Image 1: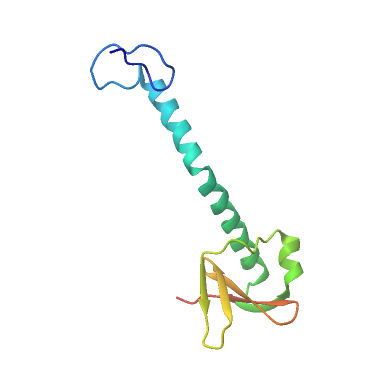
Image 2 (image 1 turned 120 degrees about the vertical axis):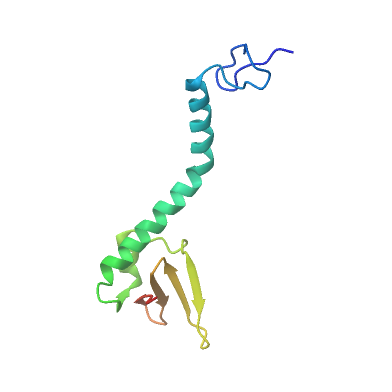
Length: 116
């Protein structure tokens, strides 16, 4: 049975369990496979880091209020969070790592910083 390199398709000579013709093909194959699998994760992590940076910038003292439009203008994406806590009163605190927010009844957002 002929075996071919998983990367370039060249005929393999040598060990029965050989999968690649050389180290370059092995590296190319694994780099391509890993970049495809982690592309979505990289995108989501970049969004989360940007959200955290925006919350940190707008909340230097650990608690304050801003208009939700301010967050949007800075590029904040409300669809991505790392954690959510609900109080007994029903308020939902959404977090991007240690920085969080809660949507108020007005067009404002209460910014908080988790103290661990």
